Amino acid sequence: MGNKGWSVLFGVTMLACAIGFGISPLMGWWMPEGVSTHAGAVDGLFYLILVVTTIAFVITEVILVVFMWRYAETPDGKPPIAANAGFPSFLKPFERFLNDQHKVELAWTIVPSIVLVVIVFAQVNTWADIKYATRNRNDATAANKARSQVAVSARQFEWRMRYPSVSRFKGWMANPAATRKDFESFGKIPHFNDVHVVNELHIWKDHPVVVHLTTRDVIHSFNLPNFRVKQDALPGKMIPVWFTPTKVNCKWDESRQRYIDGYDPAGKKEKDKEYTWDIACAELCGWGHYRMIGRVFVHKDQAEFLDWLQKTEAEGTRRN
Image (cartoon, rainbow, N blue to C red; front, top):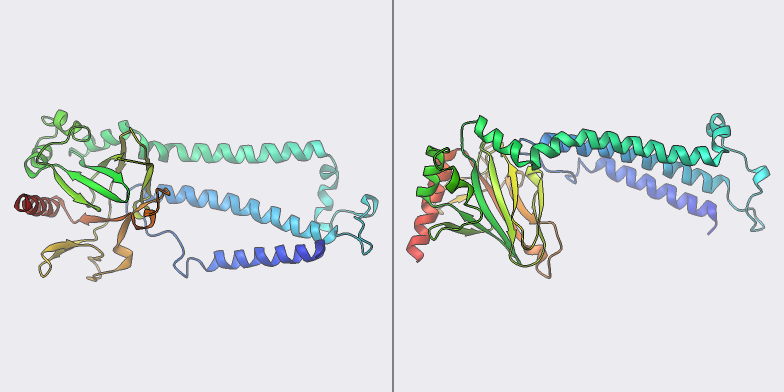
């Protein structure tokens, strides 16, 4: 197959990609709804980068297809003679510039550099809001409320969550200033009466939470797609992860005697996939990587979360 055949193949492939991209939101092949306070900022950066890369991709691929077609080899198998190979009409205005290889290379270097600098400055503030401890601690202080916190330990192939006991939790929320030392030691110093669960992250709406992330074996990646949270868990390190949920997705089920997720408070639906929020491992961590999935349960308020914590603590006490 000659160059013209390859140009047709590439052109059809690019067209198919463009059609697939265009219909993907209609088919549900897109990002899930963002349900954290920083989700909008992260999505904004995503779309900015998407627009820039799409424009660059389309331009380069169109030029590739056009040039492969126009400058295909001659019927006798020889490449086209430079003297007879002029620029396409749409490139005529840039002919002098394109004939100067030094200028082309400068433009190819300078333009992407400017774009990257713009993206860097666009993302700095969002990155700081998500990752910097000082900004997150200040937010909690300004709101006059202690953060909810959970210790999450990854292992092949599950997420182990550790919560404070009911009495310890009540002390934090009642008097954040007086219990600050105990609050800040939670991630590193487990207590004998801490509450342990597997694959269930329980938090409540509109309240900041910090996850103390560790791993017991290999590298894992703590990924909450709906909250726009993704952080690698590294052996030997405890890494804080901050976010604030903005929607509720769980309720108490009397018949099952437990809290269930996948619940849309507005639609009163159960098992709504839009309200089932996974905890996925985004780092290939072994043969069971595919089944390392937990769930996020966002309660409507602190009282409901405390009710869950009390029930879970009591159940653990009965088992012991």
